[in-house]
Image (cartoon, rainbow, N blue to C red; front, side, top):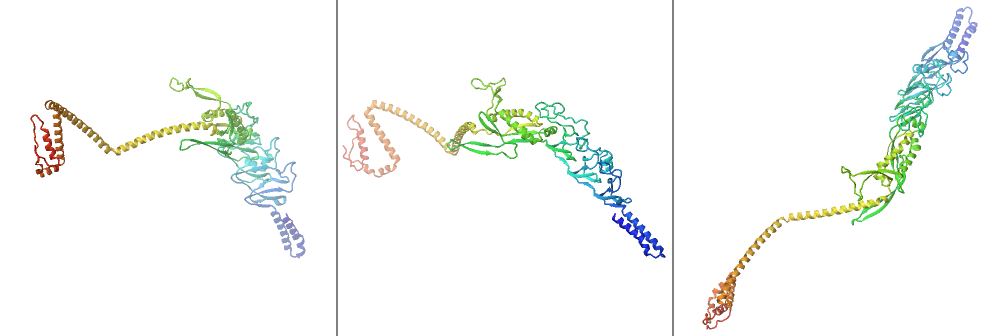
Amino acid sequence: MEFLIFSIIIAGLLVLVAPRFIPPQLSLLHLLAKAAAVLVILFAVASTSFVYIDEDKTGHINKIYGSNLPQGAYIAVNGEKGPQAYILPPGFQFSPLLNILNHVKEEPIVQVPEGQYAYLVAKDGNRLPAGQSFAEAADPETVEKMITDAAFFLTKGGYKGPQTTVLTPGIYRINRYLWDVQYGPITEIEKGFVGVMQSNVWSRIDFGALKAEKPESCAPTVRKKIDSGSELGQPVSPDKLVVNLVPVGCIGIWDTALGPGKYFVNKAAYKVTAVDTRVQTWEYKGGYQRKWIDLTVDQAGKINQTSRTETVNVPKEVADSAVFVKVEGWDVPLELRALVQVTPANAPFVVAAVGGLEEVEDKILTPAIRSIVRNVMGGNIHVEVPVVDDQGNPVLDGAGQPKSKKVTRPTHVMDLIENREVLESNVEEAIRPEGWKAGVEIKEVRFGEPVIPPELLVARQREQLAKQLKTAYTEERVAQTERIEAEQAKATADQQSRLVESQIEVKRSEQFKSARANEGMGERDKLNYIAEGQKAQAQVLGEERVVELRKFELLVDRLLTIVQQHPDILTTALSNAHKFVPDRVITVGGEPGGSSLPGAMSILGDMLSPGRTAGPAK
C-alpha cells in the first residue's frame, strides 16, 4: 500500500510539476513525462495485484473492504469483509488490487508425521447439538472436502468446535482461519490387551476393525447373568454389579472393546483404557514369622532337637501378604496363587464397574479371597476315608480293593497337606461367583507350602526318624553279617591249599586210624592166641615156668631191639669175645626134675655185667 501511494505521488509530480520546468517548444518531453506518470501508476497498481506463495505454504486472505459478516460468523463465504473461506495455492497468484483490498499472509501447510494424528477444532460453523461436546464424524465420501474446503464445510452443515474426525499422517493445505490444529500420538493396543472405549460423542464410528453407523438408540445394555461372562441384553441378577454400557457410537462406555492394533483415535473425544486380557497371576505371600524344629542324630543314635525362626517379608511384586487361617485353634499362614483373566467381552464391564484390573484386585477379589479362604479352612471338609472292620483292618470289595466312604468332618491342620486338592477345589468353587460379579474369570486357586506350626509335625518326624533308624540298624546288621560271611569266604579262598592238605591229612589219619585199628585187632588176636598158648603151656609147664619163660622172651626181644638200634654194641662185643670166656662154671640142668632157667640167667648176667670176674664153675 505504501508503495502504491509513493508511486501515485511520483506520477502526480511528473504530470503537474514537470511541465513547468520543460520549455514549451519541447512538447515531446511533455508527452514522455505524462507517459512515465501513467507507467508509474500502472506499475504501482500491478505490484499490488499479485503474490507469490511458497510451495510449503498457503495464502490466507483477510478482506479489508466489503460488507460486514453475518452475526456470529467468523469466515466470509460470499466475499464479506474479514477472513475469507478460500485460500491461495502455491505459485504466482494475480488479482487486481489484491494487496490493496486484502491482507494476504502465508501460513505453513499442515504436515502430520508418522505415529501421530492431527486433532481439529473449527472456529466457525453451526452450533453443536445440545448435549454433545464434539462434532460427529464426517461422511467418508465428503470428509476430505469438508476439511480442505472451508466454504464447503460452512455451507454443508459443519459444526463449530472440536471435531471427531482427525487428520492421519500426511500433508494438508487447509484454511488456518477455520481450523486450529493440535497433534497427538496414535493409540496402540498391544497384543494381549483390548481397548475399552469411553466416548464423548454420539457419532458414526470407523476404527477399521470396529465400525458402526450412528446408533438410533443409546439405551444402556446390561449383563444377562452372573455366570455367563459375555452375554448381554437381559436384566442383571440381583447380586451382580450393575453398570451401564452403551452401543458402539453412543456417549458412554461401549459394550464392545477395540482389539489389538494401531488406531487414529481422537483422544479428546474418546478415552481408551487398555485392559490386559492375558491370564494374570495374583500371589499372596509373606508377612509372617516362620519357625522350624530341626532333628539331628548323633553317633550314638540319639535324636537331638533344635529350633530356629525367620521373618518372611511381603515381596514387592505380589498382590498381598499370606492369608492367616485359624484351624483347630492354630494360626496358620497360608500362601496361595490365583490365576485370573478378563476376557475381551468382559473388559468393558470391568472398566465400567470398578475401573480396571488393579481395582478389581484391590477392592473386590483380594478381600473376597481372604474371607472365603478363612471360611473354608474354618469349616467342614468332605473327604474319602477307608472302611475298616472292628479290628481296624480295611474292608475289601468284590474286586479285592479297599472300600472307602465319604465323610464330612471339621477341617484339620494336616488337611492342608493330606487333602490339599479338596480344599483348593472348595475355595475355587466359592470364589468364582465373586469374580463373575466383577467380570473376572478365576481359572484356578492353588495353595503354596502351608506354614504349619512345627510343634504339630515334630512328633510325626521323630516317629518317622525312629523307624528309619531302626530300619537302618537292621540293614546295617544284615550288611555286617554279609560282610563277615564275605570275609570268611575270602579267607577260605585264601587258605584253600591248606584246607586241601588238611582234608588229605584228615583222610590219611582216618586211613591210619583204620590201619592202627586193624593192627590193634591183629595184636589183640595175637595176644589172645598167645594167651591161649600160654594157658596151654601153663597147663603143661605150670604158671611159674610160663612166667619165667615169658620174661626171657621179652628180654631177648629187648636185646634184639637194642642191637638193631645200636649195631655197634654187637661189634664191640665180638671184638672183646675173649672176655666172654667164663671164669666160673655154671651148671645147666641141675638136679633131676629141677629148672634150667637159673643157669641160663646166670650166664646172661655175667655177660651183661662188665668188670665182674667169673667165679669158678660149680
